[in-house]
Amino acid sequence: MKPEELLPFLKEVDRLKTVDRQCVLHNGGRRENSAEHSWHLAIAVLLFHSLSAEKADLLKALKMAILHDIVEIDAGDTFVYAVSSDTNAKELEAIKRLSGLLPAELGKDLQAIWLEFEEGQTPEAKLVKGLDRFLPAYSNILNQGNTWKKHGITLSQVLEKNQKPVETGVPSLWPVFQKMLNDAVSQGHLKNN
Amino acid sequence: MKPEELLPFLKEVDRLKTVDRQCVLHNGGRRENSAEHSWHLAIAVLLFHSLSAEKADLLKALKMAILHDIVEIDAGDTFVYAVSSDTNAKELEAIKRLSGLLPAELGKDLQAIWLEFEEGQTPEAKLVKGLDRFLPAYSNILNQGNTWKKHGITLSQVLEKNQKPVETGVPSLWPVFQKMLNDAVSQGHLKNN
Image 1 (cartoon, rainbow over the protein chains, first blue to last red):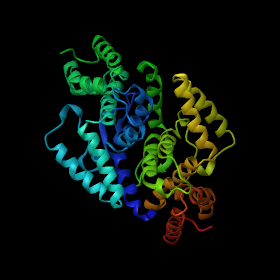
Image 2: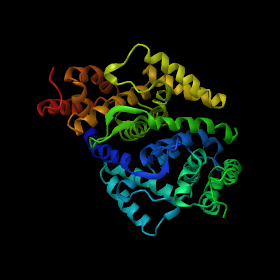
Image 3: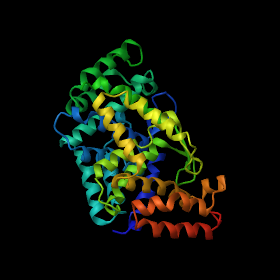
Image 4: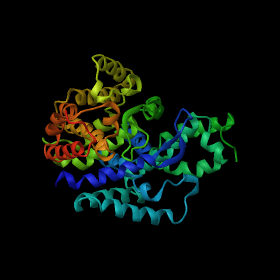
């Protein structure tokens, strides 16, 4: 493999730093972008992988965390409470285009890792998906429900989107998370309905 | 290990998203922060590890990329052309404080990975250090020497800081990189002295 064959992809993914999510930083400041979120998710994987529901391969889980959002370069970020039916089709087009920028074998590997994450069936995908859901909620817990308040999100919506993935991926995190959500309701940072 | 023991570190490292580097995004826009840079470096490791000078363990190299800059939460980012003698002491204090937020064994692992990167002697450290030097230079190559011009950086300074680490970590990247630097000089984006 020649190094110059790797540069178009390296250059293209810089754009993920310009994709803003709904979530803000823990300090309640600016919106988080999908590149720095992916880094934070990789940190979470390093920390929590020993608490994975099923034995997960750390290398594969880290690759997933790093790559899971690159499709947003084309498809944009979708707010977890507003996923539409065509999100997935756009993301599939995006992963094809992006992996096509790489030498064939590497592109195929990347696409397989991303698809495995999307399908959510393997131990690694369950771990990474659980943590991917926990992170923005944790940010809201730490910044007085910034995004929840902005979008009028309720406890039942948070439970519907987060409980199953977190329980499935990192079971021991769920009761801790649940207590934090109940506290957020008591403190008036999350609506109780 | 209890999940609540991992939350203080997960929370603290969010601050890396607020540490700005001198380098700007490829599009020449805002300054890059150290969290999204660490993500981009992890992508670079995924792409270039098969071109590593010495056989490098991919998992260890990815951990290094993800963790290499966390000390900047306390010590700030140091411009590569302005490293001072007390940078290292501050960074050592920082890695002790941050790893102290974690359960003992995990904190010890994290500190060992960071130290191995800093010392730069293992195959993984050489690979990651080479790519860490290449990325901001590549950004300058793509955005008409934005930071080079702002700070009056010259070709000889770029060579002094980058040639050895890139040649040592990813030898086949060096001639490609060298040609791009010479082109940047021809195009007036980098001073030739």
